[in-house]
Amino acid sequence: MRRLFASAVLLLTLTASVSPPAPGLVRVRIVTSEGPIVVALEARRAPKTTANFLAYVDDGRLEGTTIYRSARRKADPKFGFIQGGIGTDARRILPSPALEPTNKTGVRHVSGAISMAHGSNPDSATGNFSIMVGDNPGLDAKPGSRGFAAFGHVVAGMDVVKRILAKPTCCGRDAMRGQMIQPPVKLIRVERLDGTAKPTGLPKPWALGIRRP
Image (cartoon, rainbow, N blue to C red; front, side, top):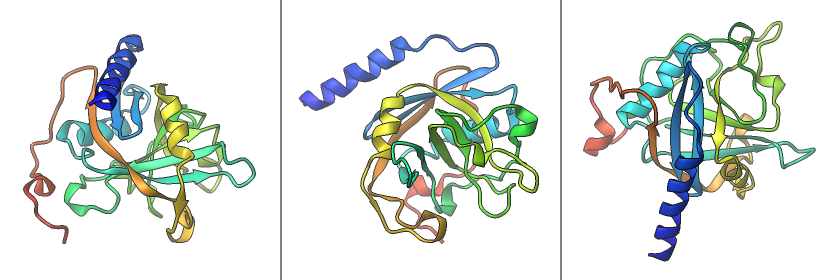
């Protein structure tokens, strides 16, 4: 009970300490089992990517998922990025937006940036995202690579992001080998703080207890 009360006080303090966003930004609060993180999304500079992420938020598609990956730099483990979201849960997937590359949006992979993850197809982003700890320019667009779509930045809770990056890891395959957080950090609630929620109205099979195909 004491820990729950302390968490509630921290959440209220964090919310109160975050100033209203600048025009064109939409704040989202990501409540994890390690604490809350608030991000401000670039609705003007990266509108398609922001709209995609907000669709997952407004539908509740990220609730009950996890932050499952900590990709630490071998040379300096204090830096890297964390990754979370729906994983491979096909029940939660929405149609993918076209990639908005950093050389078009001007939103770079600097420390604190939030970015959409994708597979070998750059236009395949769904409901998985990453948050940078330290600058990661290798994820920006460059000749021969469209990179990834950064679309906002952390405005509160960077200490939580760093704590998650330092979590014990193991397992995984290919690029994620040895980077899977054990146990994963829970995404308890993800909610927009600005504007009006716009749920898609699409079915929510995961909420009905329907198993993944």
